[in-house]
Length: 103
Image (cartoon, rainbow, N blue to C red; front, side):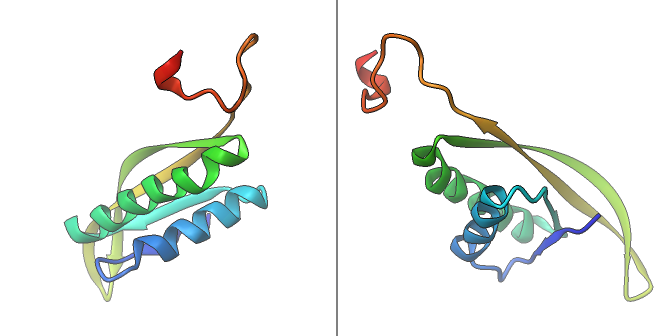
């Protein structure tokens, strides 16, 4: 399985663009982050990607898991984040331009 590897120095906007592109292309999105800073950037990227995708009728959610990995001969714990895609279907009797606050 391939992972988008996110570091503490990753740009959340760039990672978000990669996530949105993969979702639009139908490619499964799995991320891997080691350390609190990297996890922070990964979660920010998911939030930004949601903003890109929701207007197109697609939403995403995620599920984190722990994974033991080896980096340069050293055992580390990574957070792996699976991204799930949800197609949004307008509710009967509402217009897509209705804001949630008005419903």
